[in-house]
Image (cartoon, rainbow, N blue to C red; front, top):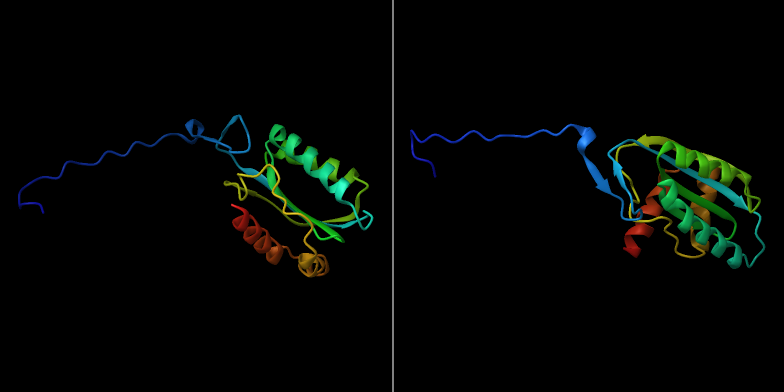
Length: 165
């Protein structure tokens, strides 16, 4: 309680210019300036044979070693029939990865469901979060393709990542 007549000292707020703010990406060893990040959510149709485990392992290994260097984080889902991936990071890194994904012969029909900028990473802890083949999600992936809408898919990705934290 304050007595009448007692003066409260003014609070000083120190504002820092945004250019001085930094954060450390958990999946990256370098410090990045606070900036806008590009995001990309796509779904595609797999060309892999029934047992494509070796190819999926190769995709994961490549992404987990390459993504940090490009400043990318994200989630990959594979249903056996479809791929879905959400990537986020600097524009240049994302454009490099998109070009590689579009050239990849392990899938076809890449459909962009969302592409936008954001100030905060959604999956910043993950160079590439992946849970293994998830056939149960194929209905959601097929629906996202049919309706060209990734909102339900992103919600599923959020739940998936929350479960593995």
